[in-house]
Image (cartoon, rainbow, N blue to C red; front, side, top):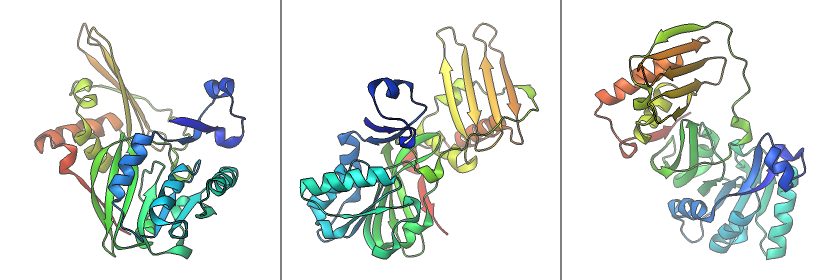
Amino acid sequence: MIVTQIDDGATDLTEKTASQAASFTSSSSAPSNIFEFLDLLEPYSGDRVLEIGTGTGWTAALLCVRFGSNNVTTVEVDEQIAKQAAATLDRAGYAPTVVVGDGTEGWPEGAPYDRLHVTCGVREIPYTWVEQTRPGGVIVAPWMPGVGGHKVRLTATGECAVGRFRGTCGYMMVRAQRRPGASLADDERESVARVDPRRVTRAGRGFEVALAGVAPGVTVAGSESADGSSMVVLSDLGPSHALVRRDGASRRTVVTQRGPRNLWDEAEETYLTWVGWGEPGIDRFGLTVTP
């Protein structure tokens, strides 16, 4: 990944500012990731393609080579980035339709599309994308619900879109779905964990997808020490928060939870449910997008 913008353009990008930036807000993704998504797109000659997230314009140029500029529309939320990408594409000899707008709304003026290619992470697949994709058409996107990032390939049926997960990934979130900064609730509840938190953080991609479905919006981050001590932090899109600490010597695990949701309880219960299902891997799960 090559960072191309920080702090939504409010700060000039230099080596020094990049190292101090509060957030990276635009980038050029690793070619290997781009090619894997383009393979999942599985395009046919003459397909009309909508790209969400123009960035530098490099992927849009690849799409133009495959489909022709007149069949490619690319949407970029940042006006300055879109302007730079359009100029770069023009110098390279390509002329897709470059639109400045919120990518989660798609671009209905050019619909229906045969293929929809997304270059930014989404927590929820916007139904507008399904509406703008021709039945039988394909949507590929980085699905990032809060726990892990997953490549997903969906096929539109006319009423919904259905598909499977095709590997892991990590992308910058689409601006409309960034996690809001939330104040933690003041209340604090302490308990003892039933499940070793390491079992939860090591459970794998199948559990991550199960947790995303059962406990929407929850993020889980963990760390471990050589002596068996570990710590897990859970948060959601609101004021709820949980901190789980395991002492390696005593093996006692203390849970501190705040807010309206008991996030560790939800994660623990989901883990045990997933175990009861037979610990299915990610290949056993699919995603359906409906109104």
